[in-house]
Image (cartoon, rainbow, N blue to C red):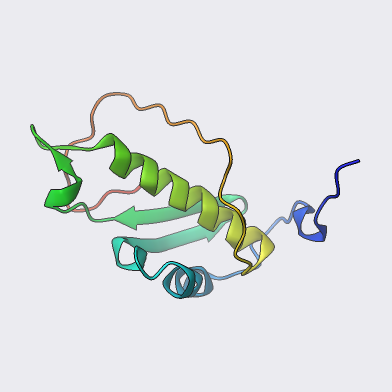
Length: 112
């Protein structure tokens, strides 16, 4: 029988605020914290902003796939943290990303 964490009861509201989730990102992942800004957090959702720089852009002016995946991975992880609290957990084991075309570089980029 698989042991379930006490935290995985479905919360209707996040445990952490936007500022607390951003602080968690800064404290636990300082190497990428400057790349992302938590703009909103809600029940099982987060809006994470990234301002792409030249290192994130492919020829033709599109945002690279690895950049999109890193943003999605970070968003899923921070959404979970927002719901269960500030514990450094394992990363998502399965994450599938499907895009409809190549996103063009913009001043702001957010998946939600």
